[in-house]
Length: 156
Length: 156
Image (cartoon, rainbow over the protein chains, first blue to last red):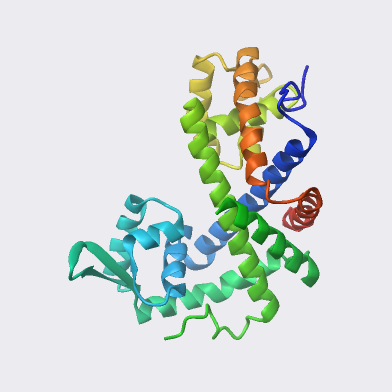
């Protein structure tokens, strides 16, 4: 039985196998962290990850975002955020305002209640993430930051 | 207006802010790559990412997996893979066999048709990933591999 992945691919070479191995490891790390964060958010604050991410993006934005900008930063489709935006507005955590010059464009901003809600969770979220990266020393964190920056530049 | 994330968190410190920044960059890179892979799979092979991942895990497994092992390796819930398993079996790409000593345990294996189907796609998938990592030199790929290995050890 042939077990090695795509050993028969003539196009494959040693470097592309290393890239693939690297990508699978990166995906595994991200999936593990995301799964833990999702579960901690639910258990500690009864909050879903999309809801936390939504507030985080608005919190970090300086002022209003359009729904399209928000979707782009969340890297999800416009449709996925509309229902969530409605719920967050009804809870007074965000405001939605149609732009006077084009009422199809809706501006979204976090309210002061939303800021407080986010901050309460974000303090713990930061601690969880720090715990997950605690196996790396300061220099390794810097190196990883720099290398992922190089990767990000290629991707964008 | 206060823009810096959770500057008011007394528990926060410089290192945990760097960890958070690192995690957000890692998440962004992974999301970008995954989005591109998803779109390339669809456009080039009319294949979804979960379907490709399902075949990949079985291909790399040496022989049979139980549905639970498969779910664990895919890092998704058992329920999510059952429907997909049924479809792949009906297309002759995998086989499912109840274990004689406990028929609730189902063993899954990739068929030779499934292996061919996977290999055809995997050759291109490897090229796409290599392209996405092409901005890094060999040493940077090795460093990133090693650092993510250190992170993975902490997470597991």
